[in-house]
Image 1 (cartoon, protein in one colour):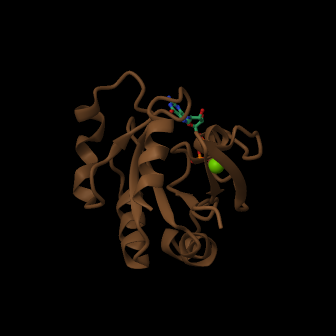
Image 2: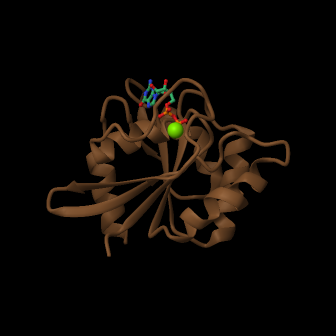
Length: 163
Ligand code: GDP
Ligand code: MG
């Protein structure tokens, strides 16, 4: 069984961009429009000799009337349950949002291990881009740039080491 990394986060934080980089595929649709990714996408990747499976969830998109928790319960919990590690992605340009807090609470309830990734961090100082996110209580936030690739391979090595 390959270690399974599941990407979770509110719309537009860059999950599909990260998925594409981690799998070097164009399977996941990347768009400016929230809500485009509706299904789970599975892809394989490797760092060095170490293979892994990545799941790009669309489960938090769109935010339904019933609320993000409802959507997560329905569509994403299964993926999270299958995760060896959840990669919870937030947007370092937007800073901490109410949706991020709700997702963090939900993830804590699942009991799955979580790594907190602060995306869109290219060109920003580490302390500045991560400062907001410590209060989520999910450990040290790790800055990455999915679009540029900054710190992505290093982050995956740390992730695989933690399994
Ligand atoms: P998803 O909804 O979470 O799957 O997000 P997408 O991967 O579709 O990306 C949403 C938007 O953020 C797109 O316009 C991406 O080009 C942009 N984006 C993704 N990663 C980065 C990044 O590392 N830096 C910057 N500046 N933009 C990014
Ligand atoms: Mg997407």
